[in-house]
Length: 227
Ligand code: HEM
Image (cartoon, rainbow, N blue to C red):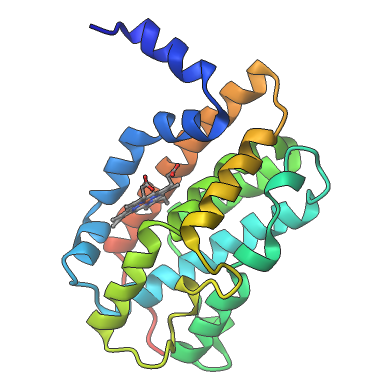
């Protein structure tokens, strides 16, 4: 039987994309099993819940994409910087405008857990740009994976037509999510990190999942603003 030490050595010998997936495997199961994600998977998402999720995602991607743009030429960010293909902020803004009209910015409502997540993203952008890969991975590869299924469920459950209110899930610059994910993983693997930085990135990825879990738990209990 494999010992934990052997398993850990095997993980540390592999590439960043495999290490990060292994390090966040349990966190992913926990994220999938939050009440909000479970109601999603059962097709029981309400319009209010979706609107509230969009408000929080706006704040998260605002902080994430600002940190990525600011550090675009940093050596640990440049290889995984894909604004054309991945940037979500404008898409989420479009969805919020669809639901709330022109004055959507005044209607944004977010719980403390979302503000804490955005705060961490700002800290990382300022003090540890090499950890941004952990945050970009957690959000963008998630959006290109399970997120695609969630998009179809949202469309069906809420009866949204012609992609209206669903821009967040749509990646016009990515023709094949699977191929793009492969490219993204190979770019992650090309980032040069010291052993200490690598450990830091893996820890940060677990933190990124935890921040998402806390945000989703809080969102499940919140009430969305009325349009
Ligand atoms: C209903 C909830 C969810 C479902 C059904 C789901 C499902 C999936 C599936 C099927 C994959 C593809 C696995 C593979 O290619 O091997 C995946 C990957 C991923 N998911 Fe999720 N997911 C959910 C929630 C989340 C959440 C909340 C996050 C984080 C915010 C997340 C982050 C990721 C990431 C980062 C990957 C890429 C894993 C990798 O290839 O390294 N997922 N998810």
